[in-house]
Length: 482
Image (cartoon, rainbow, N blue to C red; front, top):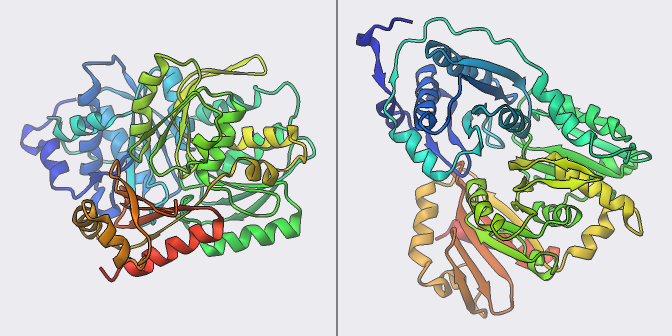
């Protein structure tokens, strides 16, 4: 296609002026910042950054249910077609379904999603043919030199359903019989990108499924900071329907939210621990914020702790794979990353080194069937040696969060006293990601700026759930006074 050079702009300049930045996982920003030109610039820069390493003539795209996502996908598709690159548009599906389909086809992909952040924001996640991009790849995208021309009329996109069907089959084929027969599962659908897949998936595994609260309005579910409203909902649903479990996810379906038969939502790192044990994983990579019950379980030959974010977890897989055959990782927000192939019921489940919500749910339910009591809560009680809680202050400027970390990283004792802990000492400080303080009574307080939104997150760990939650409330109520 001929291009008028007078209308071309440099992608690096467009991205530098866009206000959009890479966060913990993907580029995130306000919807109005993701203009067609910015989406095109990101897409071309991504292609430019990987074309010397991979040969491809097709790129896959999928979206979440945000009102702005389809137009962003149109812009990405338009600029690819200008470059002679074919587009496979998989429609609204979970991020791991897109990533799995693209990896099987050895092509790159782009997921249009803001995950759990509010609907006035959105984002882009990029995957090379071999999986999720790294932090160095992010910098390569931002510094790539690509010319962006006028996109003209944006194309209508025709949905290819193969990725959705393959994602369901990825898990249903692992079991020779309907393993969830007799189980009643509620699916809290809200606006999740996977809500049209999950009922079929769990029913094919034998479960009775009840759909709950599908929403036409985007719901920003944060699996790491479950709202009091959603806690109450799960309790009420469990009492009404007598569920064995409730399954939900964040907006793009890569982070699970699972409640036991009592309607209590599981912490993501405890869910990850149970899934890894069920998969007979040998070595784990987990973020520094994860619950120390992982090490206390003595279930793994090695546990490496990383900065928070799936790129950091994935970066550890190569090193762990040199020594161990079964490698995985998970985050405190629940996303499970399979770093190597594993065998389940003589079926090979191929590696999927990106966050996935379905695998931990299925493995947890399978493990509960084999347990003495046949329920999830007993499994959780057996592995919970320590208890975690987390929450965040919304609309808290990132600069303010960073300033707190910078000011007190070398004087954590002063910070603890300012936060109202007058008679407790700080025994250890970990600055792997944010400021993680282990106190003299073995409680843990961890402050960290969110990588995706203007929020200050607090993680706490203690001997029981109530104490952990009280620590979070106390810290966040006092930190605003600093």
